[in-house]
Amino acid sequence: MVDEITRAVEILKTAKTVAVLTGAGVSAESNIPTFRGEGGLWKKYRAEELATPEAFNRNPELVWEWYGYRQKLVLGCRPNPAHEVIEKMEDCFDDFLLITQNVDGLHRRAGSKKMLELHGNLFKSRCTVGRTILDFTLGDDPLPKCESCGALLRPHIVWFGESPDPMKIQLAVEHSEKCDVFLVIGTSAMVQPAAYLPLIAKKMGAKVIEINPKSTPITNDMDVSIRGKAGEILPEIWTKAGF
Ligand code: OAD
Image 1 (cartoon, rainbow, N blue to C red):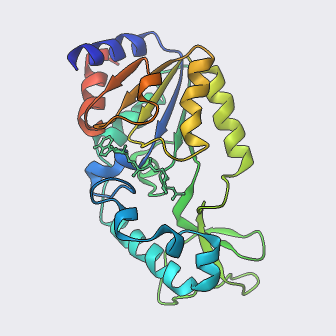
Image 2 (tube, protein in one colour):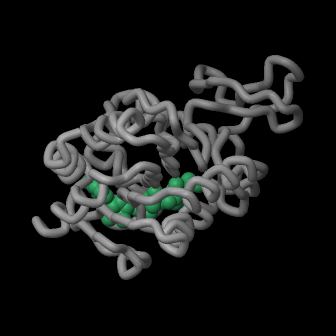
């Protein structure tokens, strides 16, 4: 593994355009549960009852209750050293984009700005009828309404059966095509289109580096694959690269 870290350091030292894709694993050390694997949310809860448009139409109160619970959980957590290193990357490369599948907002709280939240944000809500999108934390009303038109609000999250904003996908693909280094951190690489982005980068000639305690379906496509926790490996790489 030391060799893999050294290789990652050498690659990053000469990088100019960098893309980072993160998943739930980057927040695991902040005590936010991942989705799959041991202790994962989809082991405990049924996605089809909580994270689909049909589930919301059937029982909006239950879906809001679940998102309210997740908001509370995240508010009790803090960004970890992985989020902090990723935030520092913004200023160290000529061109940088963080593409996150995470909805917990921890990258933003760590200070990241050059970022796309591909799957939305737990602390945003949108009108089910109009175009209103607002910063939102669930309060006493179990069925919150839009202030402009009175229609039901829904979490501003990309659910199963929905696609991310096409503009965000386009920006993510464009950056993946032009980057010279692509880091894949803490994702099981099971959900598209996110999982395909590192493969686009690889095809266009970028070096691709994965950081994850476990192997994933894209591990064999990586130039460097580091088995370990993001909150430990990223600070080590950062210190060794001397940025
Ligand atoms: P998953 O829960 O599918 O995968 C989390 C990954 O993080 C796994 O590969 C773990 O091995 C890895 N991991 C665990 N601890 C880690 C650590 N300390 N450091 C680094 N990696 C660690 O989460 P995602 O890949 O993010 O979608 O899942 C993708 C999407 O599926 C999510 O955005 C969500 C979910 O359904 C929506 O909600 C739309």
